[in-house]
Amino acid sequence: MSEAPAPAAKPCPICGKPREAKYLPFCSRRCQDIDLGRWLKGSYVIPGQPVEADDEEAPPTAPRE
Image (cartoon, rainbow, N blue to C red; front, side, top):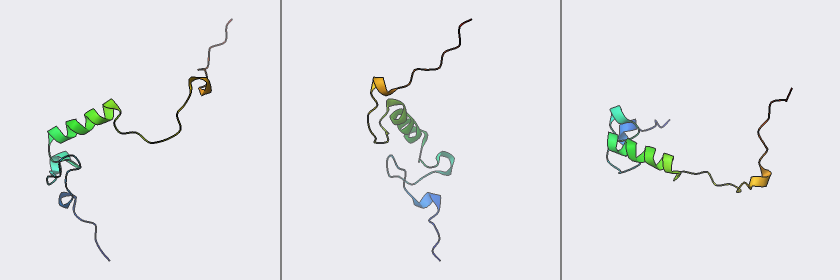
Protein backbone atom coordinates (compact mmCIF):
# COMPACT_ATOMS: atom_id res chain seq x y z
CA MET A 1 0.00 0.00 0.00
CA SER A 2 1.44 3.39 -0.91
CA GLU A 3 1.44 6.16 1.65
CA ALA A 4 0.47 9.76 0.92
CA PRO A 5 3.45 12.13 0.83
CA ALA A 6 4.10 14.19 3.93
CA PRO A 7 2.68 17.73 3.81
CA ALA A 8 6.18 19.20 3.60
CA ALA A 9 6.87 17.13 0.46
CA LYS A 10 4.28 19.06 -1.57
CA PRO A 11 5.28 22.53 -2.74
CA CYS A 12 3.55 25.78 -1.82
CA PRO A 13 0.62 26.26 -4.24
CA ILE A 14 1.52 29.94 -4.76
CA CYS A 15 5.29 30.01 -5.30
CA GLY A 16 6.40 26.36 -5.41
CA LYS A 17 8.82 26.55 -2.46
CA PRO A 18 8.75 23.86 0.25
CA ARG A 19 5.88 24.21 2.70
CA GLU A 20 6.33 25.34 6.30
CA ALA A 21 4.27 23.63 9.02
CA LYS A 22 3.40 27.00 10.56
CA TYR A 23 1.78 28.24 7.31
CA LEU A 24 0.31 25.05 5.80
CA PRO A 25 -0.45 24.64 2.98
CA PHE A 26 1.81 27.62 2.15
CA CYS A 27 5.48 28.40 2.74
CA SER A 28 5.08 31.84 4.29
CA ARG A 29 2.70 34.52 5.53
CA ARG A 30 3.24 36.32 2.20
CA CYS A 31 1.85 33.39 0.20
CA GLN A 32 -1.09 33.11 2.63
CA ASP A 33 -1.88 36.78 2.02
CA ILE A 34 -1.59 36.40 -1.76
CA ASP A 35 -4.09 33.53 -1.65
CA LEU A 36 -6.48 35.49 0.59
CA GLY A 37 -6.29 38.44 -1.81
CA ARG A 38 -7.20 36.18 -4.71
CA TRP A 39 -10.25 34.90 -2.83
CA LEU A 40 -11.37 38.42 -1.91
CA LYS A 41 -10.96 39.68 -5.49
CA GLY A 42 -13.03 36.79 -6.81
CA SER A 43 -10.19 35.22 -8.78
CA TYR A 44 -11.26 31.77 -7.61
CA VAL A 45 -14.68 30.97 -9.03
CA ILE A 46 -16.68 27.86 -9.74
CA PRO A 47 -17.89 27.86 -13.34
CA GLY A 48 -21.63 27.80 -13.80
CA GLN A 49 -24.55 29.39 -15.54
CA PRO A 50 -24.87 33.16 -15.00
CA VAL A 51 -27.80 34.22 -12.86
CA GLU A 52 -30.02 36.94 -14.27
CA ALA A 53 -31.58 39.53 -11.96
CA ASP A 54 -35.13 38.39 -12.93
CA ASP A 55 -34.35 34.81 -11.90
CA GLU A 56 -33.51 35.75 -8.34
CA GLU A 57 -36.25 35.44 -5.78
CA ALA A 58 -37.22 38.50 -3.78
CA PRO A 59 -36.26 38.26 -0.12
CA PRO A 60 -39.16 37.41 2.19
CA THR A 61 -40.93 40.40 3.68
CA ALA A 62 -42.54 40.71 7.07
CA PRO A 63 -46.35 40.79 7.01
CA ARG A 64 -47.89 44.21 7.53
CA GLU A 65 -50.33 44.78 10.36
